[in-house]
Length: 355
Image 1 (cartoon, rainbow, N blue to C red):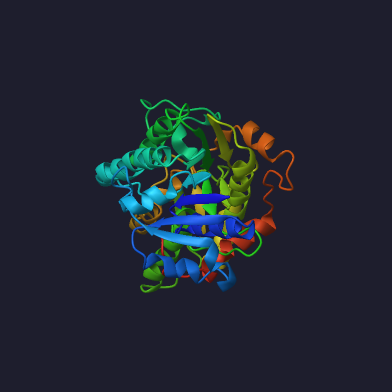
Image 2 (image 1 turned 90 degrees about the vertical axis):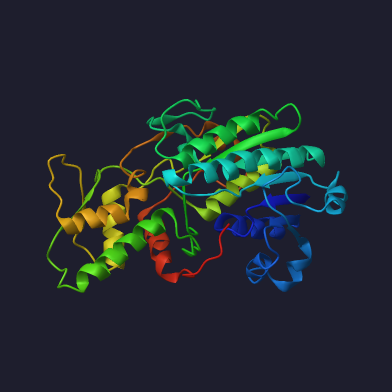
C-alpha cells in the first residue's frame, strides 16, 4: 500500500513508519524541511530507504504547501492517509496557534486527502478530548463542554471536522492516552507526558541538592496516590494503528488506552528509585500546606499532574473488536513493563527531533 503521513518525524510517527516499512508499504512523509528527513533515515536500514519519499510542505494551506506538480503526481496513488502531526501545548497563551495547527491544519489535510482521491483517512487524536468527565465512550464528545486546556479543545473540535468528511472518504479516529516508550526496550524520544514529569522531578532534585542534603525530607506532590496514569507503550499504539489500516471502519472511533493503568504511587516509587529521590509522595489532603520548595516542585510538573489526578474509564469496545482476530491483544501492563518504560528516560536522546 501507499501511505501518506504527517508528523512522521515525531516520536510516534517515526515508530509507526518503521512498522509500515517492515510490512512492505511505501510511505510518503510530509516534512516542513527536508533537513528533518535525515534523523528519520538514520533509524531506518539503508536497504529500506527506497520505501520512503519525503515531501516538503506544511499544514498552513489546503495544498499542504506542496508544489502543484507533486500534488498531481499523488492523485489516485495514495491508499491511506495518517494525520499524526499536531501542536502539543497546554499553555492558554498558545490557544490561537493551537487552533491554526490542530483544527485548521486537520481541515487542510482532509481537503488535500479528498483532492488526491485518498480512500481512507486516519486521524490520531487524544483520549483526553472528553474534557473533565470521568468516563469516555468511543463516540464524539461535545465541543461546548469545559476542557482542561486549549490542546484538548482543539483536538476535540478537530475530531468533529474529521467526521464531517465521512461521506467523501472513510474516516477513522484513534485516541491514544499518554504515549510512553517501547514496552520491551523502554526506548523513547519523547520529552512530554511521563518523561516531562520525570524531568521536572530531576530538575527539582538538582536545585534543592545545591542547598543541602535532600535525604530524609518528604516532598509532597498534590495528587491522589490511588489515582492512575493511563500510559500506553508506543509499540502498542502502532499495533492498533496497523490493525486499523487493515480493518478500521468508517465513522468509528478507537480508544488506544490502558484498561488496567498503574496506580500513581506505584509509578512514583519507581521514578524515585530511578532518580535516587525516594522522598517524594502524592498527597491528596486538601488542608496540606506546601512549603516554598513544594510549590516550585508542583509548578514544574503541573502539566502532567492534571492527568494523573483522575481515574478515567475509557470504553475500548471498538478497539477490542479491531484486535479480535489479529495476533495482537489488548494491552496488559505489569510492573516489569512499567519499570522498563520509566527507565527508558535515562536511555533517551536528550535532543529529540519532534514535529
